[in-house]
Image 1 (cartoon, helix red, strand yellow):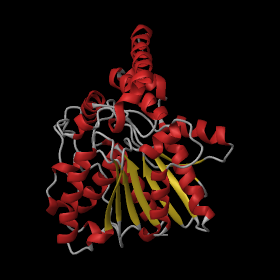
Image 2 (cartoon, helix red, strand yellow):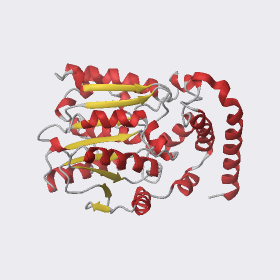
Image 3 (cartoon, rainbow, N blue to C red):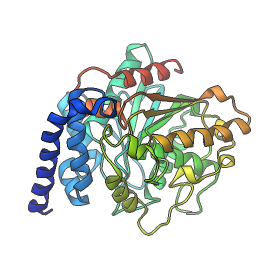
Image 4 (cartoon, one colour):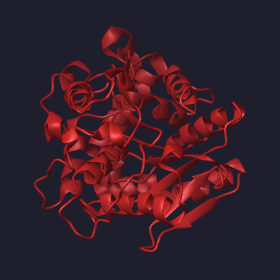
Length: 357
């Protein structure tokens, strides 16, 4: 990693942050929820828009396993990992013998590992469920990162994990909830697509469900690689990144592939999602009113809902929540910025999940 290049990125980040310190009061409703977040998001946009892949790794760490080990050590909580036959790992937050398990796929454009904010959000979610008397734990997949491991490597690992939980551990699908943020939401949908329409790559394990999963939660799901949605303009000053980052990440993720219905969910027509209610009893889609991906998320909701209802499912079992002025995966960024208490968006997800356990 070029130290000179990183200094240049840091200089741009500092400059953008300093400028926003003075201009934030002029942004009005176009900016983030509060002054602190508005200033921090300006710096994040500058940083994320200018980093290279090696620089991202240098700042974020090499793997989700590294992030997890540091997180549990810092929190003073026990760490426990599951290693699959391929060597792929998944990590527990909570008791691995818990009755209800939340399988989580992290975001980061498939190109960077999870982060402490993501882990903090998941730990708080687990603690909230346990405090309500539920036997509940979170299992976080460490998938291989692009661009070294392009699509469909991550789908192969997600399918392997699900196959293991169902066929080896013999867990009842009704005790499993699945979800993810951003690229993790993309991966959740890719796994559903694979179960409904087995992927043509024979190396991806087949997955079958004897009954629907308890629920699926998609936080700011990355469903479209199109950068021309109007929300990229209207939310340009309220989100944590812009199209520069997404273009770099989608290119790294797809590699030589042109993409398909598994890698870019919005390209699938509504009929593709018929039968989804046989895989999950309910779906929650969360989007931030201030995120650049919002228009794509809304369009996806209407498309998947058409398939959901036409397949014979109740429309009310597919829910979308758009929290005003919230950035991309706001509840995770909220924790990443050091907030010790849950944001309203985090509490809304807790409440939704609690009602379904």
